[in-house]
Image 1 (cartoon, rainbow, N blue to C red):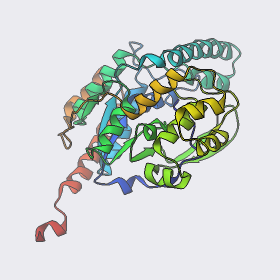
Image 2: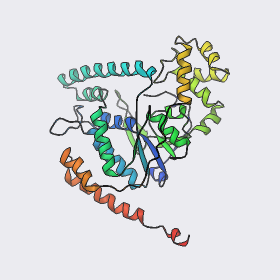
Image 3: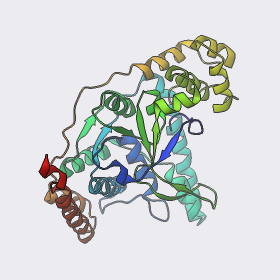
Length: 342
C-alpha cells in the first residue's frame, strides 16, 4: 500500500521509449501483486492451468517484461526478503481484509453480481512462495536478472539507484522516496485508462518519474522531514495520527526542527520509540551488495516450456510474441551509425 504522499510529490510524465538504454530496478512483489489483482476472469477468478495452479502473475510478468526489453530498457526485479518486525500489524490487517473480501466475493457470485464479485476478488490476491519461485524461473529463462533483498524490495531498489547501479527504481508505492531513491518510476508500462473501483469512472494512467531532490526543493523540506510527514500520515510500519493528512502534516513539519517536536505537535498516540525505529529503517535499511548482470541471453525454448507446456498458455501467441521480440532484439543489437566512427 505504501505511504499516501502522492498529492505532494512532483511528477513528470514520460513515455517508455524515454527509458531506452536505462537500467531500472523493479519492485517484484509490488508488480506481481498488480498482475494477480488485475489479470482475472469476469467472475473474478484468477487465471489457472488445468491443475488449478494460478498463472496470472506469469502472464503479466512475461508480457510486461517483453515490452520493456523491446524498448531497450535494462531491467532487474528485486524480491522482498524478511519484513521488519514493526510491519506485523500491517500484515495482519491485510490478511483480515483479504479474508473479508473472500466472503463478499462468494456472496456476490451467489447473487450473480459479477462486477461486485470481481471487485472483491481483486482484494483477495495472495503471493505465495511457489508463485515467487515460478516467477524467478521464468525470469531466469528470459535472461532477466533478479535480486533477493535482505528486507523490503523498495529499500534494495532505492539503494541500487543511490549507488548508480541502476538509473531508476520502479514501484507503485512512494516508499522508495523515503528510502532515498533519487529517481523513481510509477505506472511502468501502464499507459491507458483504469476504472476506479466501485464507480463508473475511468482515469488516465501514464508512466511518470518522480525526482526526490526536485520534490524536496519544491516542498522546502529535507528527506528526514518527508519521513516525519509520512509517519504522521501513516506508513506500512505505523498507523499514523487520526485527523492528519498530507496538508496538515506538511504544515507541522514546516514548523518543526526535530522528530520529537513533530511527535508532540501531532498528538500522536503511538510510542515515540516506534517512530524513531521506522525513521532509522528508512534512513539506514540493511541491503545486499549484489550487482546484476544485464544483457543475459534469453532461452527461448525454456520460456516456451514454462509458459506453454507447464502452464498451458497459447503456444501460437507465445511463439508469436517471442518471434517479434527476436526481430526487435536483432535491430537493437545492430551497431548504431555513430559507433563506427568512435
